[in-house]
Amino acid sequence: MLANLTQNWGFMRIIRLLIGGYALVEAYRASDILIGMMGTVLVGMALLNAGCGSQGCGIPASRNNHTTTEEVEYEEIHSK
Image 1 (cartoon, rainbow, N blue to C red):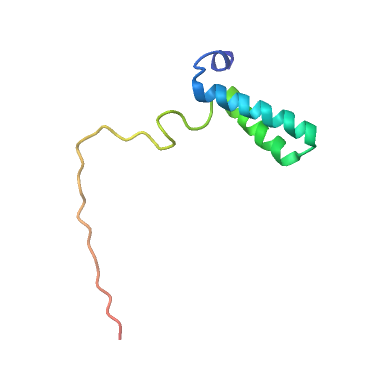
Image 2: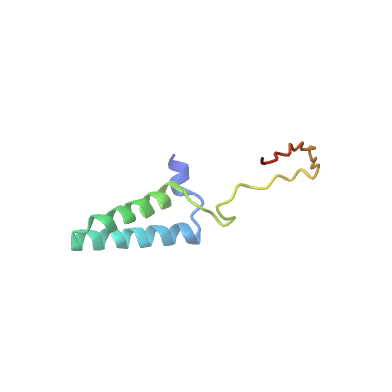
């Protein structure tokens, strides 16, 4: 857990921490709960290194080029 906090600090992770910290300060000054929750989420994402990375939010594509197609059987339904 400590290694996750101290390693892999990229540009977007620092930006999330700064924006989340700013949102928490402004939420405290304005007594705004919604902005405070948003700031908490952003700071949590930065500290835990969670969220979308530079690769995007998708699941990594399989590098297996052996695609097989299965034969699909259809049944026709006729209306009366």
